Image (cartoon, rainbow, N blue to C red; front, top):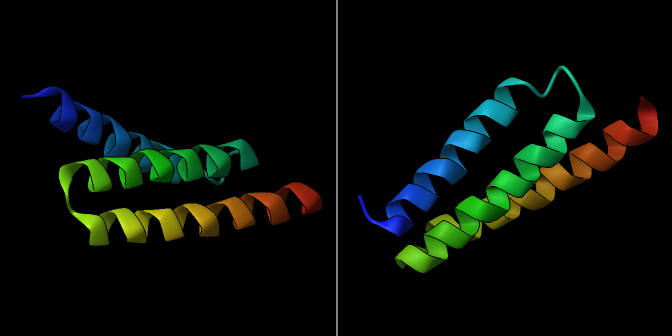
Length: 73
């Protein structure tokens, strides 16, 4: 396993964990957004720009959800 693959595994694994824990705290939503940024970087570094682009959009969606959740609760 090379370094880029390990980075991608970390990014996607952290997305999965933070998504699973989102109901516990709005901080996990922010962590999910950050994980999406990492996954986006991985996609672009790997040359899979559609994956990188979609993950960047998901990061923005999650960041907005975090902002709204933070205002509410």
